[in-house]
Image (cartoon, rainbow over all chains, first blue to last red; front, side, top):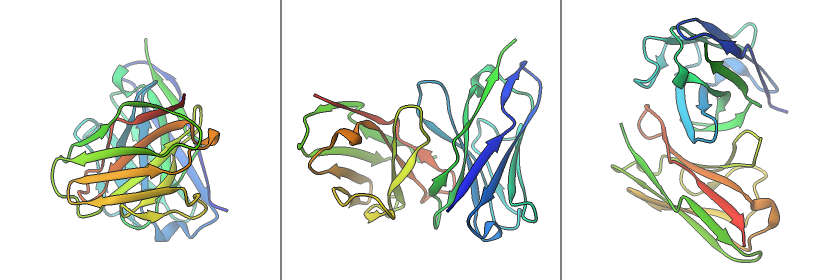
Length: 118
Length: 107
């Protein structure tokens, strides 16, 4: 059974940093791209970052480029999201997702809440 | 970036009814489209990928169709457990984008 468990969320002041983790199980982690997607309270979904199987290629939308960094440790079956220079508009539930084939998430974690506020 | 315009924003339907949700892409996405269902307080779950392929375990009353820039999700014989929000997502372009969502309620 595929399981994705996110941790690391919480309340953080604007301009500070936070690092999210997502531990995967139930599949061969090193064979799949992984994603982070977020959802602001009461809003829709926004893709935040992608990472390929060996971590050599990463992608971000303009809204987080230069502030967020996705990485992975295939030995630990874990994908990370380092978030720097956080803003109030980064307040959201952050989900990690496993790639199904070519760009969609076939399994998602339960999500972790990040609140950016002074 | 490819923009995804989803309609309607909300929808009220009766049990047993057939419901259709639409997504229009700002350019051809060559069937690189997925549909997700999100129930209140839960994480999104994949329903459809590659525009018309049913994900494992998804009931056959859900179906996807379309091509080019126009895509749709159809739910036949609406059940109470289908009350949820639905989102489309394009993945033809590596800068993935989602539709704004459709909230489906029971009439």
